[in-house]
Image (cartoon, rainbow, N blue to C red; front, side, top):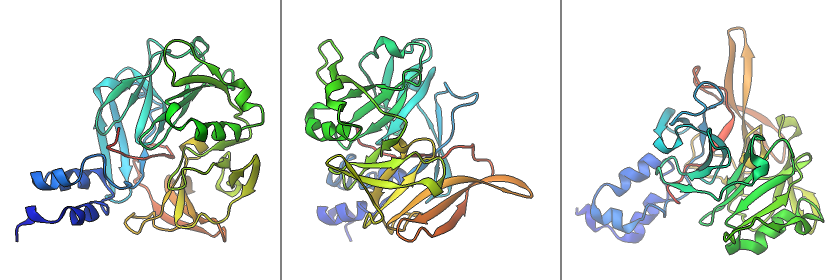
Length: 324
């Protein structure tokens, strides 16, 4: 048959089951008709990757290493614009990088596409104090940065198009949050400085497909202490059922913990109403990293799989995306 003449809706349906960026790119490379039927920004939710640590000798490298649970392969990505920069935040398929020689200079990078956008210059209180944070949003990207020294300052970028929703997110931190919003200055209407409570609970970095709800979680130092809450009119309601969704948990920060749709197309991450996390295990031969699953309703804990022996210590999830 003439494969190029397949109906556009059928092609779109097929592409929606592709959970790896490599498969999606190959799908669009079959012929011009398939490429035209599905744009690079119309892909479905890719399966989360695990991002290798860059804290050692390669912190300012242009190379990134990810691990795919579906292909069981290590993915190495080279981003020349990242050379001499460290990763300060991640989320929504993007990274925020801070220049080693100018710590007030930041860029937003999609490592898959290589596209880079300069962010507004950071306020002076970031100088010599470090910058950390997260990236969130679908279509409209929001970047949050804060420093460890003051523990209460952050920069939000690209708020305008969903201002009411993000104000509700900020209000979830406390009654006085909106009072602390001030203009960053200059001509950039999308930037504000705010105070951030960092000691108690944190917003999840992503809550798709429930993006209009505000979810928070306890600091996930250990899976036994992990609790999920829905914020309703300043009240935190414990959540034990997230329906046909799951959570992938990064131990260091809830802002790099994501709620995503459960999918039978995901390898090793197929259960609904559960959260997945990585943990270091010890045995007679030494230590290794492993993937675990815990049911939110029953709290039953399940060993899922062992990671490769040479995997660098990291429990940070990355959500690959070709969108920008």
